[in-house]
Image 1 (cartoon, rainbow, N blue to C red):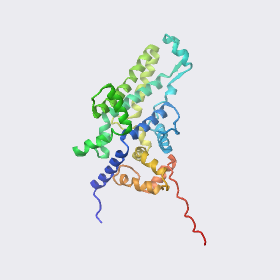
Image 2: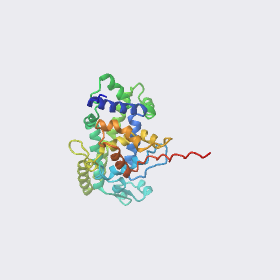
Image 3: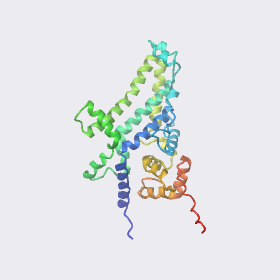
Image 4: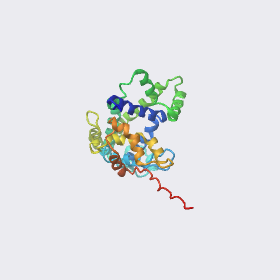
Length: 308
């Protein structure tokens, strides 16, 4: 039997990714993850009981990210605390408002700096990081089809309908670009909004905010766009794959008859052979899954035949 070449191995892994995106688009996969990260950073509990809930292991990975990758990014409630929302709304001056709200300006600056640095990564540096998975060298006829897998499915159709009511006649590409650009521009406004508030609050607030922004921008990503905290995560690409593949893994967790860890490893094997993920065997997968509580159901013991 002929051994596959490295190119053939990578092609098999890429085809499996394309099959995944055909079942559920990139945005449909990642929006729940992004919402989970936002909830984690804001300090809100995960709503595990609703229809959009992710499998439990995903939340455990996000908690790991909070302790490592986002370790220098405070939660929002640590930066701003409102003592009386009703009285604060009735304030007419900044001096009046100070009695009903506490602001840790350095931590607010760390949040602002982290957000802006992250937006810069996705806006300017994401393409280089994406090359690792080998989709940058697809033929033109395949590239167009691949891009459509990012912007499809019920979620995108809903967004398309909303945006087309505002700007009829826009193409899917124009709509997707407009949506992404609006998110980027919205995040960019966080820094100026915080700076204006600190300016009105006082000189000390402005100084603390700027100090925090520098720490936040430098604490998340280095100059090359690498996540600093990822050094503490040995198998970071495996975690990304487990998050990306949550629909497939969720189906395995709920399947009847129950799926075993061997089934998950067999499904992940093409990615392992292509070096898309770091784990190389079933034992490593079991060790990785244990702390994040990714547990496959164990098939029941075989039934004994009844005696006549």
